[in-house]
Image (cartoon, rainbow, N blue to C red; front, side, top):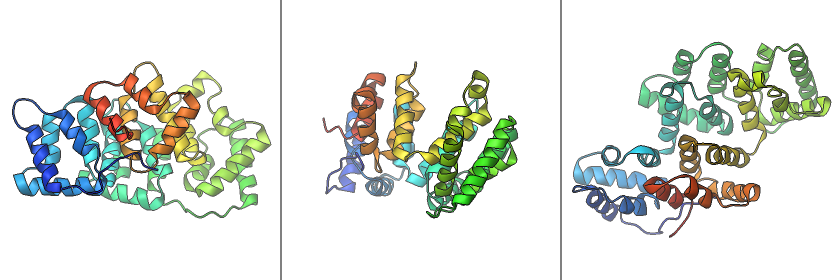
Amino acid sequence: MATLICPEDHSPVADAEAIRKACKGWGTDEKALISILGHRTATQRKIIRKTYEEMYNEELVKRLESELSGHFEKAVYRWMLDPEERDAVILNVAIKEKPILDYTSIIELSCIYSPQELLAVKRAYETRYKHSVEEDLALHSTGELRKLLVFLVGIYRYAGDEIDARLAKSEADIMCNAIKSNDFNHEEIVRIITTRSKTQLRATLNRYKDDNGSSLTKYLRDDEAKAANAFLGALRTTIRCIINDPQQYYEKVIRRALMKSGTDEESVTRVIVSRAEKDLEIIKELFYKRNSVTLCHAVSKHTSGDYKSFLVALLGNQN
């Protein structure tokens, strides 16, 4: 269930003219830009980009980059890209543009997206950056974390619903024995987590919990040393992305991004921009049930200015 509110009929020519007018002169009319771009579907935005370029002989995305700034610019920039290209940018930022590799964004795309969706993002990445995702990941990560991430991105995971109960029992035991030996990066754990179908892996993890009285993720962070280990953190994130519904996972991501000391705008932008045309309405409902406050109110409280106004528009606020 999307939150995006769009007019049934719109004129891409009129939109392009209004955007051009908003960007002309000494100051940018951000409210005008939000009133248009915050209420157009991906297909409509693509047509607007093409129309604008034909009318004014310049790329709309580049013009917006030059007119806007800060978190607002980043959010609008990603919103204006085709979905696969946007995800490719998110991957590249996570891999190369942060002081420490952001494995969370990489794992989200690898484990929540279908095999076909992930393949489309990887193709968009190669077209845009002239490298494969795996190549850049291998260059910018090390050790067991690199092995896990490259496997997750590189695998074309089977998407069927079949469950082999005996296999689930066998592989739950393999995990249990490896963990009892404190061999968290055991190659069999990595193999199971990165290659099994989501349905089969959920059965294995549920069997592990039934046999051991607690979930694998809980055990992987039961002391400060484990919680601070990047490989174990990535393993926990992988498991959560696989066993939880995507909406439950994203609700937790945006809740943590808004509620912790200092808003994590990168995560807030990623969730709202990438889910507004998919299932953000469900995420909003889950957020309210969990926090007794609307997501729109929380976003308004913890962000400001045109950035806030744009996010609120994508959340479905018509005011």
